[in-house]
Length: 328
Image (tube, rainbow, N blue to C red):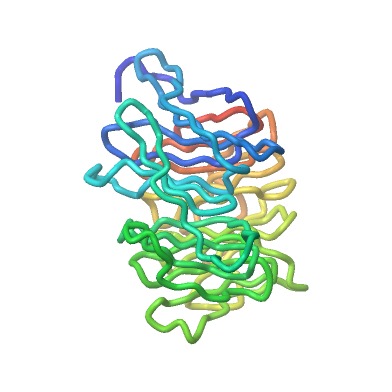
């Protein structure tokens, strides 16, 4: 890292409330992120920003309009930088964007699998497969999950995944296994090689909705999820369905975001409405995890959180109009 950079925290103020957030992993673009607006209007924005290591300031490298707020943004998981510089977003549809050298962004394709209706079912989230970046999985309020081949620009599989809206989807390691969570309060695991069956790994009491799902890429036995309006994060071991392996109870109000460390089997970060980002060490499991090992107090509710996969000592959080990166 440049010797001029000594600080532990950098902040960027956007002109709007930030919701979508993603770190780029491209080696030629360190400290680059994409952020999406949360505006109550049809036209929303996505900005590409990058930290100038000499000045210590974030610079706006590109901006484009987006229909509705992005429910999720992801850069292509291409750590070698050998593929095209792509960005994906979900909202009304799945869109793939190409980022040019000068930051000029153009829409590569809009993917829609519902050709029979004048109305679209909004997409709540998606995941980009790390083992094969041609594969993206999306989930929707219409109870389905769809697996896309973005090279061929078509859906390869669509399945009814839950009894109600699906709120998040995540791939395990490899290309075949993924899981989803939804308004029916269940975590379900699927294998693309045998879609006749799915495994219910966990269900909440009284079917309280589960909002987010994160798969531990360093140890795929473990998943993390969070319950609507609850201040806990639930850790699940897929080898022991139905019972949480741990419950992380350090927040004083609801958890909004969860993210596993991309370089460690046992660390996870949670953030919430109590303005805190907490890092937990899960290595004592199956003993109860009492307290986080690190805590950061922000000045507002934290809506979003991402741990950089290429620069693993940095975490990004979004609070109101501010994007902040923290060195951990």
